[in-house]
Amino acid sequence: MTDWILRTSGLTKRFYLHDQQREIPSTFAVDLALRPGELLAITGPSGAGKSSLLKCIWRTYLPSGGRILLREASGAVTDLVTAGEQHVLALRRGEMGFVTQFLHCLPRKSALDVVAAPLVDTGTPVEAARDAAATLLARLNVPSHLWAVAPATFSGGEQQRVNLARGLIRPVRLLLLDEPTASLDPVSRACAVGLLRELKARGTAMLAILHDPALVEALADGEVRVEPHPQTHPEEAAA
Amino acid sequence: MMLRTAPILDVAGLTRLHGPGCPRCVEATGPAAGTNICPHCGTVVACADVNLTLMRGEVLGVMGESGSGKSSLVRLLYGDDAPTRGTITFHDGNTPVDLLALNARQARRLRNRSFGIVHQNPHLGLNFRVSAGGNIAERLLMGGEMRYARIRERAMALLARCEVPPARMDELPGRFSGGMQQRVQIARALATDPPLLFLDEVTTGLDVSVQATILDLILELQHQLGVSMIAVTHDLGVIRMLASRTIVMKMGRVVESGLTDQILEDPQHAYTQQLVAAAL
Image (cartoon, rainbow over all chains, first blue to last red; front, side, top):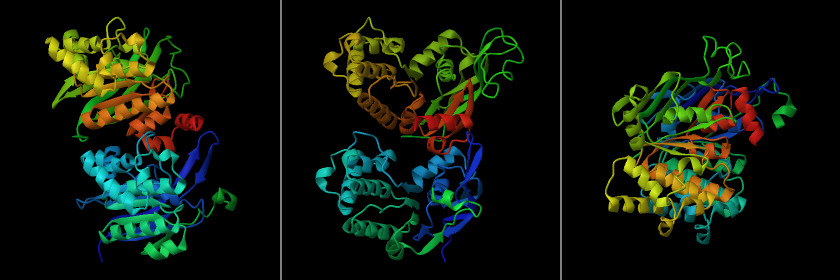
């Protein structure tokens, strides 16, 4: 059995709202181990802290407790809960990727440049990056007449495909995905599934929030069931 | 290209008091005290105990409301004002330089060569009595370039780089739109290829579409030239777009610092939570 690349133990996130002087529980005591080439599906009810779990690993959220161990390409094991800011930034540039739920990008930029940006940012020449972006957009079934257009005007599904292409263009060792195919039609979804399978075959480890059981069936090697904090009231968990 | 493992600027314990000062100025002011005026001696504490490190090629955001000490900090770092205490170390290549130990002439030379600044108000950053090209020439002359043809060529290239039509290089900046004045300011700031750029509310007051083009330009410059930047703004959208790390200031103190997305999505300090909640 290959060694894990990511392991969390007791990963917990709570938010403290100063103006209301109260704590909002989110992710609670999550344990998981993820190996290269494996995709683990994160499932659980809304409000159980699935997105928070991914954001803790990406360090957009500061975890409140537990450990997030990442085995880096060098073999060094880093706890992302305590890693320094420059260290986290270096890992984001080099080893980790995050496909967020919604596309956030600079206005005015063409879809092609939005997708190419992560490669350009890490030193690939613009033309080569655009070629790679074009290949991915074509594979994700984004019509070529849209490539020169800024994605702000795109439909939800088109934006999601641009977002996915941007998230997949740069090879990483660990990829976090927050509902990567939620608003895709069946054809585009099949394209996306094909791409994710290829990434798995190449050894990328993935942690993905997936709602659709068929998708879990098609892609996942295992499931991490996230449950709300035991003291959370049901109505709060649903919010 | 973008070496982010070496620091370019180290700031420790930076403090600026306006007034007589007393031993209790710092402890009696700040966010917890709810004031930046010392109740014992009336001294205004513009900023106190600011520590930060900027890496090469990195953009650090400084956010906070008006009067939080953001601009005071930039004035101290750029050398427009002298701190009451603290240290500023600029890494000139591999040589650490204690900026506060330089004499006036050395400080001016280093600043002309290594720092650029873009102000919110173009009147602070541009000379409105000379042409756009002349504004760039001024900086080049201060940096020691004396050859007219070289100066003109460089000015033309910089304006083109900042998307100011070279045909307008002999016009006075007063005839330009606000967005174009900002572009000339950026071109001027870049004249000597400085490794460090200070941006003080550069998009404030511009309309949204112009803001986007200016941010675009700044990101491209950061990218292609690897310039390190300190970007002061109260606009969270600008911070999100430009900065990888952000510090939050209130009443002259740094109340929180972290990765920009963390500061905006999981703010820890009550003040940052308020700022972020007010913006959304």
